[in-house]
Amino acid sequence: MLESQVYPGVPASPVVEQPSDEPKIEVEEMGEDCARIVAAPLAYGFGITLGNALRRVLLSSLPGAAVTSVRIDGVLHEFSTIPNVKEDTIEFLLNVKELRLRALSDRPGTLILDISGREGEITAADLQVPEHYEVINPDLHLVTMDSPKGQLHVELNVEPGQGYMPAGQVDGLPIGVIPLDAVFSPVRKVNYKVSRTRVGQETNYDRLEMEVWTDGTISAVDAVSRSAEILSEQFTLFAHMGQPPLPVVERGLGAGVVLTPEKYNMPIEDLNLSMRAYNCLRRSGLMAVGQVLEKSEEELLSLRNFGRKSYDELRNKLNELGLLPAEQPEEVMEAPPLEEGEVPILAQQPPVEEAEAAPAVEEAKVEEEAPAPAAGGREEKKAEPGDEEEIPEWKRKLMEITGEEAGE
Image (cartoon, rainbow, N blue to C red; front, side):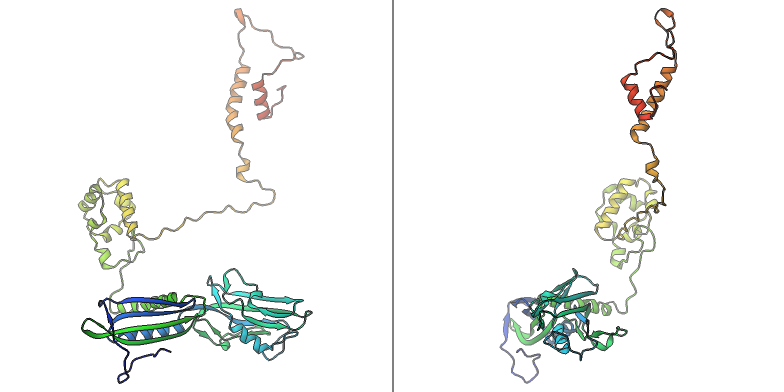
């Protein structure tokens, strides 16, 4: 087992020579859930500082998932016996605590164990798992059914979390639900060792060697990487201590965007605009990016010789640098529900073919009503009521569309 630290007076490990003073990371995978990570050369004293900080975060601050409560049909408390099961309730709960789960979302879930008409060993593979969770150790032994006539129904409540949560922390559980203390951390063990190393003739450097074991829900390398991100986020609070808060653009194109002083005072030359757009902004006194972001679209388009093409170019450049707020999707107005018997508005509109044919029908009626002169200046004899006239094919189709009868 690796030692945790190197104390004064304790024989140190042989000094390992490093090719340069630039720190590098070496990773040696020792299995699916174990890895050895070496960082060297580090400034003197930072081996213990980084090793201890990473170890504490690895063991206590990484997110995970665990079973927090169990409900067994016919069992009211952990000191009861389970019918037709070889193990007692306490032994079954201890087996449940060894269940390792990978959470695919931040939602809690329920695992179901429903056994009927079966005898023998029951494992985690027999669990009914929701889609946003995954069982890492399906070979885990849960219980042993001692009768083929026995029935067992168990509900396991699973929650995401981090660190450790004692069973007594959950209040208000109904009768028959047994709380469990949960270990959410996916890291099982962390060892680190700090030894001396040298670069050339300089020997005041540290070499940090870490060994990390996980439960299989996350790789050891990803666990160390995530722990470093958590430490970096926490140190940011101290990095900006005593500094004024970053300014926020209150109006214009960049409304709501937080800008550092460097970005606010960035000259517009760094946007690499076309000469026309650049000259328009410069003549208007807009020399910094922050000043441009405080202008609205109407104000920019009102600048002399600054048209829509220049505006689109400017907006694309600002968007590439991440200086514009994220666009919100437009809300789609849903139509109110129809009452019983009500017809949708679209259904009330005439068909397109009928609407297009209506003018043609009117023109046909006008032509039919207008008297046409007969050959030689004589008027044709009007048809008697009893006479039948053959209807042209085009007129018949128009009548079918408009619903007119042949005699009209």
